[in-house]
Image 1 (tube, one colour):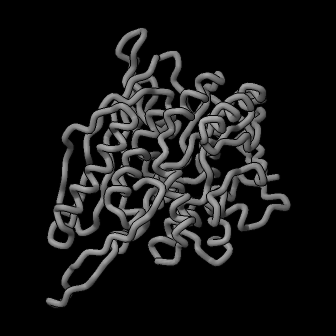
Image 2 (cartoon, rainbow, N blue to C red):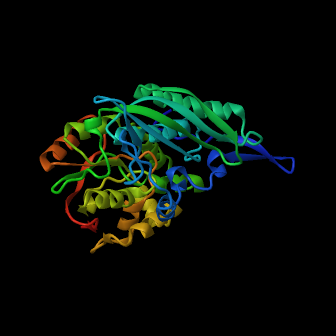
Image 3 (spheres, helix red, strand yellow):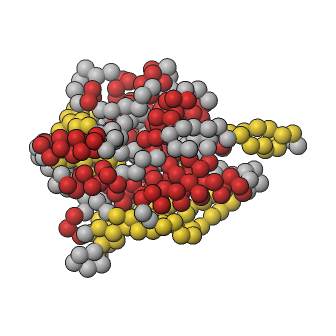
Length: 360
């Protein structure tokens, strides 16, 4: 059931003795925190020559969320993929979160999803087929909710379970939202709370309170379709979804690509209830620490605390959209999203600059 969290126990065998295990015990790191460290990924991509083609509207140069390929004057395809290890112990919920996270890249580009393919890695000797069926059912649930079909895919045998989607969508070539689109004077809107990476680490460690997990799961299973529509209605041109690199990591890429500086009003940033308490008790994902370190060169902390910095760097899974819009339009977008029951806030502003980020 979405919005709740159940612990799924199943039996594996060690030296012929039965052992009860949770799904997250198979994961070396939860959700999008499993991403390669952003600095390492940048080093790898720097060694590859970006492809060039007149119909490739968005490629790899600016670290955008998906590729965009023009078909004609009115249509372009949006293609993306995302997958990760178990982030919760309920298999169907994990599948749903992974699918909502994968399709978020299409929404972040201003697009509409059409169909998707399953990506599966599964330890077939350790986990039952029935559990995999539940994961796939969760992905299909998300597809049905978002209006796209999940059709086939590919699977491999792997000691660590992984699940996600390759998604194809469509967008008008003139309405693509990108990392380069933030404009001098834009207000910054964030459409989901931060902190799910911290909660996910507590889930893996078995220390997360049920009500905190429920809040994080509700956020991660909420699609970004309404947020994308709000960004387009507000006249946004710059947008990304906040996932494994955290708010600071994704904003670092956007600010540099757009030629702006950003100010983040820390107290305005929504946070999952209970996540800060977990952080202050010492729950800090490895991916969150890597994001903090990767952004240290561009972030001016001012009088904000280290806990504030870590929250803003927290590695999110199925996070919200971050977009820029003229201030009045941004306020209207936030009001409209809140009327729909979504968590959204104006969290800062940008001005012409060189990619610096100030916390106030």
